[in-house]
Structures are given as structure tokens and as C-alpha cells.
Length: 158
Image (cartoon, rainbow, N blue to C red; front, side):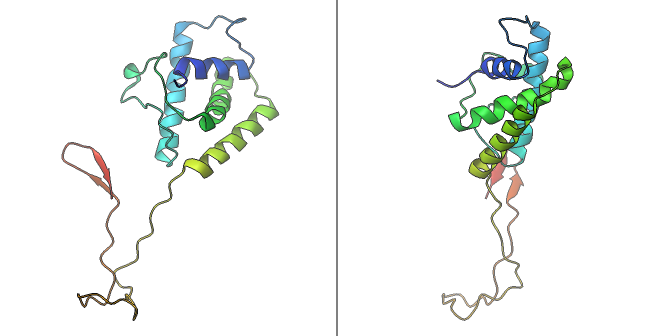
């Protein structure tokens, strides 16, 4: 059983000193914070850091009690980076310790989860003398665009 979005937000609010047992956050504040966290996770996803966080197709499709399914290694990065993003909106100053923890956790997560793009050789590069196949093509094949969008808008990775 994974963490819910609400649990991540409660931990992030605790990190900036707005613990739920002391401060009552309104449902609107929680919804706004969840949208900020969803945007942050979508940005990470675009950078290649894919941890399985359910990114909604629109803000209305996201719920606070939705399980995220992220691995435990990503929890600290999500909590501390969400806290850093939420603090200015609530008039809080993030401690240097929280900023440092957020940076370290993000870098560790990036090193673990980022998927580098596969390198493709140009079609002008000779295959070399050691390449022995039936075909006599002396050069590398044309590079393939790794990101293709089909007719239905789905994205396929080659």
C-alpha cells in the first residue's frame, strides 16, 4: 500500500511548520497544494524522472485520497520538494536544512530514476571493417525519432 496524495501533503506541511494537528487547512488550500504537487510531479516526469506518480489529465481528475504507488526511495524527495514549493504561498520561510534535504533527495532520485536518451549514430558514419552481414550497406541506418505520436495522441517510445 502506497502513500496517498493527502499523506504527502500533510508531511510537506509538517516540514514547513503547518502541522495538521495544530493548523486546520481548508479544503481549498489542500486542493491548491495538491495541484502544485501534481504539476511538480508532471515536470519531473517530463525530465525523465518517472516514479509511477499518477499524473492527472486535468486538475479536476485528481483526488487527495488517491494512492500514488511511488517507491519508498522517492518519498523524501516528494515531501521536501513539495514543502519548498508550498512554503512561499503560506508565508513561510523554508529552513536551510529542508532546502538541502530537498536538493539531496532530488539528486539521488534523479540519479536513480532518470532515463538517458539512447544515442543514435548519424547515417553518414561508416559501419566499419568489422561489420559482417549479408547486406552490404556500408553506413549506419537513418536515425529514428524516439518520440512518435500516433493518430489517437498516444505517445510511443522506440
